[in-house]
Length: 290
Ligand SMILES: [Zn+2]
Ligand SMILES: [Zn+2]
Image 1: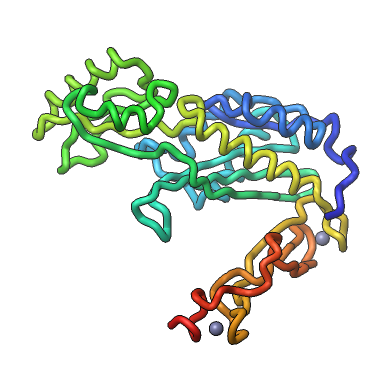
Image 2: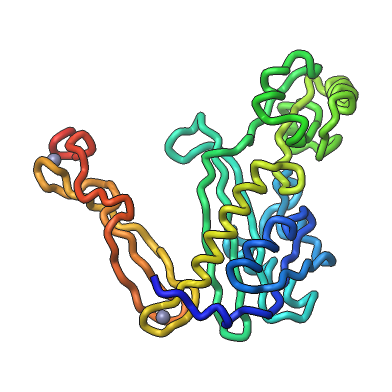
């Protein structure tokens, strides 16, 4: 991979809008990887672009929401570079019992009209919910979700009103949790509190680690130049299935190539899988193992 001369962004400033402490996660990767100075766009209310706790829905899909947030930060600080991130949590698409996180991060270069993004599927997440009347009944769950280093949100368990307002978010104290659960249980027709992990970055060290990992991934991509036009942001744009079966040679659904692409021109390249796998086990083949 060709690396862009580091002076392209070195010494410039980049805006990050966040209400959740992400500046403490992103400053180092941007500085070490690109020589960029992070400026915190503290006046932008990022919750107006959607919140995890469900009160406000996103104005667009995750990547476009990210771009809109980055642009709001750039406007607030009158800068031509911006960055923003976005996360979502839910069941794994293929294994519904397994919780999974998705993180998106977008780098916007307004001067050169470039939008560069990366995303991450996070198998390590504490995303979970539970219902109970008091903390003593859920000691195992509290341990599993990393309480109290990872915060919780509490509301009454009301099956008829699953989006009822939260009594509290960012709860990291056991005595406070017990009081809130008692209050929530009192309001609940079933006498139970509904608890959910608070996924906001400042409340969730596991999520901060994912955001940090994605930041380094995005910085590497920004530092990679298109071999045709030299623009930054060269990287994987899609994955092409069809890895041949080792027994019959028929294409399987497994990934055969990664397609690399540019954000500024139409140049693309195919490259083989990075793990070196050149054929699929016949157990994965629709012909050998229908
Ligand atoms: Zn086969
Ligand atoms: Zn190009």
